[in-house]
Image: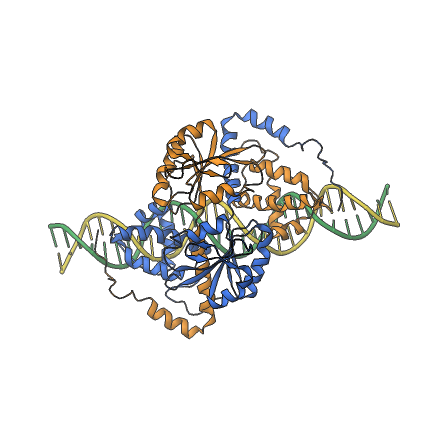
Length: 246
Length: 246
DNA sequence: CCCTCTTTGTGCCTATATTCACAAGGGCGT
DNA sequence: ACGCCCTTGTGAATATAGGCACAAAGAGGG
């Protein structure tokens, strides 16, 4: 598939690579600010916290932008990565939910270090509508469709309680938004052509807890683990091993 | 390696599976609240937004907890997944940074739907020290070591500006914390035995922008893409194709 | 102008993750 | 007591990601 004339820069960039490009970009921008003109894959990989071969392979997907024996030109690479990520154009973002999180997001100054513009902040609560947050006046959720069209919103951010998330998402999609960043702890249902990314604080904590528990398990002897498992596998009191049917 | 007597439940759960368990858990808890006694892998997979075979394989890593022809007992599975994630014990969390984000996190009531306890909120700014947030009094960062010991902190959350993050992280590590959740846009340097997970708002937006750009590219004809690429590959005005050396 | 030394770009091998497809298990109706 | 039918658990096939190790590119010195 997608096997038309092989182009110098194949557009089929692996998802794993895409997820790392922003990290490289941040490292590069920091180097740029410090006036460092070139950097080797080894050094850049170290600051980005990845393996240097992986970094080179990632960058090779964008094109052949390094110089053997020297490294990469920082400014040039900043530009190429930015372009690949679509940051050479501006994206308008609307945030729904002006609670703690929504306000934190709106105030998050370095929102993508250029490339993104918070165009609107919406909420359903009449008491917060009109509040000034980060230079924006909170608008009522009923204006969502108008806002999306008027401000040419391409990315919708959902920072509402879980119960409201799907409804807000549906309205975004209906209004033509095709990228959604979801902070609510629910799985959103969207058509295939809409991208959703989810950020879930408690999921991250739970993953950490899992590993933390592992470390603790290792601290006790193996006999202990056996003993723990033997009892742990039992269901808690009052839990039927034989489920009733639906 | 790790090939001792095969135990009924192998502890080597794939990382990808661990990352999905919290999602399953949330879905199961929701079912539990609605009083639904059993659920099939197909139905659970749909609510969790994954493929049903993947879900079954994931769950099979915990043990054989389903009933053929029927499905999984919801309560029982909630318990098993919770236990596997280490949520049957309590974890104390300390948040450093009482800015917008830190406050949002502290106020985030459903912080893991049990299992986690926000034990302290710290900040370096004397003006915010003493503020009441989510029933907690903000303490000064200098008390970090004491807090970690007194509250038996196992997970540290970093919600500071980027510049302070590494320093705070070092102090956490030095004080004995082995799990860190980092919201600052920097790559943290830690010893091997410390787990770090990173949540980065602008990275998520950038990934969305990448895909959004793709969709837009597809909207124009292929000739257009060729034309765009031909010019886009050129460096911006004033950018040297031949880099100077370090 | 050639030789040396550094660093890229990538072929190839390994590991991890996903998905299909089906045999085996077990409840439930008759 | 039997057999049907639904759903699990998993082997095997495929896809994606990671990383080693090296040939080839190119800068810079002599």
